[in-house]
Length: 263
Length: 183
Image (cartoon, rainbow over all chains, first blue to last red; front, side):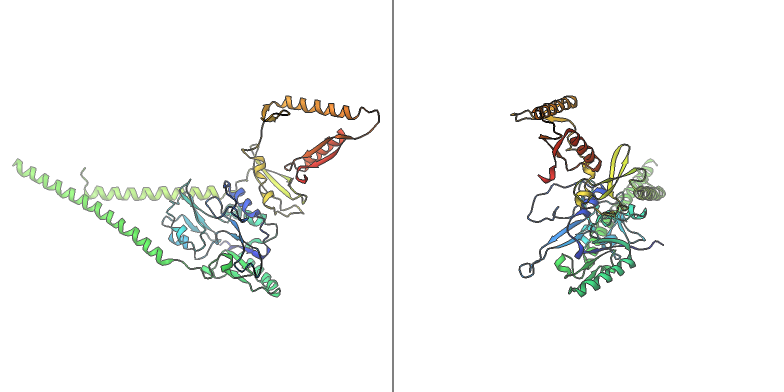
């Protein structure tokens, strides 16, 4: 049994250098995107099939009273109770023993159920390949004893990587330090969606960082989707059977007619 | 076409097994493929990041004479494996479609760049250097410096290239050895 790996993102330590963004592209060989300046340093503006991690530059609503510039590394949370894995009809999305949720590109059919079901808007559809892509926590590196590219490159130690228990211990230690400095902190991902393998240490409310306060699986949606898939499927099956049997009985009667005619 | 019940069942079974077989095989192959490290057979050498004065160490992986990966050197005392966005992007200094691979020359007063050969460029540069040096050294005094030449280094030169560059310029007697990023 492999130990559960985990990533801790200490957003208070992040300086927004975006080294992780570039390292991710470099290691995973994703091409760059052409973008326009939109008034923020956040670039590209959102995640895409070629951008698996992104530093969000946040100026909160109460910026005028309490000016602060916040950075959060957006990436796949690798949930234990992963909604994307549960809706995947082909089994392309797999939850591995070490906790990494990864999409097998050769099985993925690009149905985009996972895109719709993810509470964090992480999986992104790739028009070029017709599949969905997302962060895979550099599974090849992890399996070969290296840290993921983003954790290796982070100059301030905002992104750290290790066993889940180890990362939780580090998070609690940092929590003590930040609490002493007067921040009310939260370890986001400790229990959310069954616990996540990417945990954030947030010194402010989760909603300020663009995270849902209590992420939920949109289960109802899945059920209706499922039903919509099953009903036409059944109809097609019934139609095939009906056609085959009808043809057969027709040919039988024709054969018996011919027989009776010959007599 | 007439299909008996037996034939129908046979066909269904064969199709189902074939489908499972294809998908399963493909899945196993894909998994084995992806989990091997991309740089496993690459030759690794260390270098120093060319950009700023911090001097982070980097590992360059070379396979078949091509740079395939550059990342932070965990054994380097300065950065311990970490890199900023510029250092992480070093890979595209080596592999870039936009990189100039031929000599471009713009004549004085011209608005266009023309393509020239390397031999032409080196001859031209050396003759101009000689001219300038001779003119500056011709006033009869013995000096060890040239005021009429200046050198501008590039941002993508690494440690060793900078060493060679400054050594060469000092040999010529150039005093104004500058770096492009400071101008």
